[in-house]
Image (cartoon, rainbow, N blue to C red; front, side, top):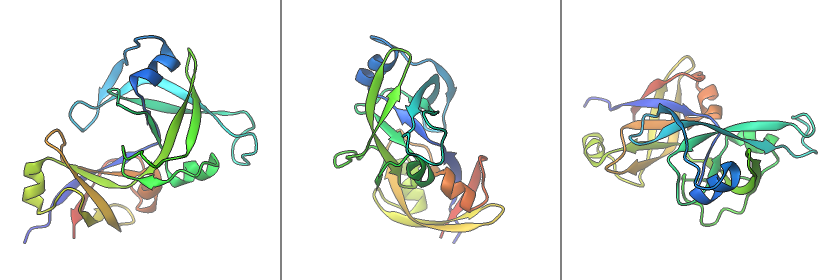
Length: 197
């Protein structure tokens, strides 16, 4: 049986915004300016950034310093910030590890600042996951919500367990890991490949 090959992409910290929060941060009826398409159809990196004001007590950042978050589009029904565990520790935020978009029980917030105002946004550590279309899921013999294991081919090599499968007609086959996970397997900021095991 042939191994199923899956592209692996590194997702650094970023923010998704609702139109309501986008307007608070950038002005009424603001429209994001797309600079680059992402691998998932219809998703893009915007030129806009927001700033996190770091906690004064944080020993790892300069007091009163600011950390940028890239905005990804399009707008969503609810805003969310996606961090790595390292980011969350440095920012002193108890961000839960959940599936991206599953914000119902999230109680951790970070205040961000844009050119026109501020907004408090829920913060999470996104579970590593695989995007795929229904056809790609059938070909790989995986189902929506299933947890799978994958070996990442990289400088150090690593097997990741508990990868959530997310199936949607608008998805394209790709595995997303955060910067902590990429560093652990020696992938760095580049794209790689993995095989379901």
